[in-house]
Length: 303
Image 1: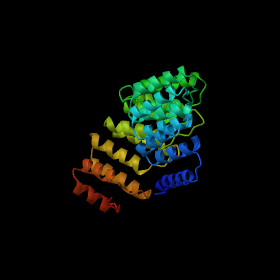
Image 2: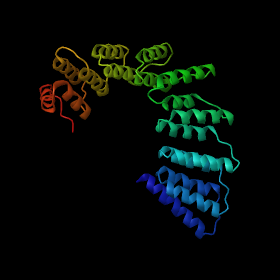
Image 3: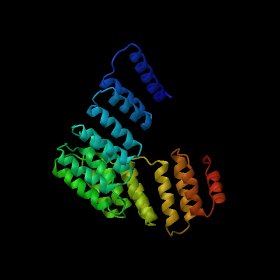
Image 4: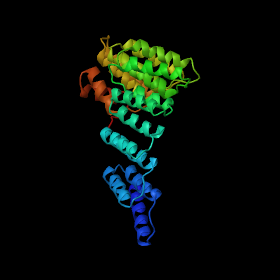
């Protein structure tokens, strides 16, 4: 692969350097560690860190940030914090890059408590927070606390005169919708509309999906129409959300409603996905009937 070639090339050049009796420096080792990290090979990255120590080359903040980021992206939160400890032991100060990687690891694991603790550490280390910091804090919250926590972080962000971006609002809307607080999700969407930001499908989608989980097909349809009226084109994802709402709702003639959605998909040139097929099957009472409807609508069966 291209990335694999990058590591192999870096190691080959390092071998040539050693054969030429040139002493490697911190940049040499950082390049090797970064190449291994980009391949997701933490074992190889840590091996080069060990060789670095044996060569008596002092690691830099870049060295540690690379290792922390690689561990975080690999989902190894414990390893990322272990490297943070090594960073401190080396009398180095964490930077915004350090904390962004650590917060991202907490968000990936849905560990809101860890994210909050890291935010406290960040303030203690006098590392400047930014919009991205709060976006990750919002994304890290668990479903039960997501709505209230998102609002708290957004309010703190505004108090620091930081400008929310589309990701901030989308994450807040999604957090509120997933926690079942659709009214709060709708309020944040309205607040987003009052800014210069233009809501997209990632802003409307969580509310449509939230209505589906509540079994309210009519409400889901209202938000779908509002989305399209605002100039946002629906994708197959939003149609799948409407089908899911139909599957949860008690409506008259659900098959007729599903047929109408399939006709709209066809008119927009959208192709069904496996999710479309499985959700449609729940609406109409089985895979065979769903296949029949897709065929009648002249829509291709998903593979």
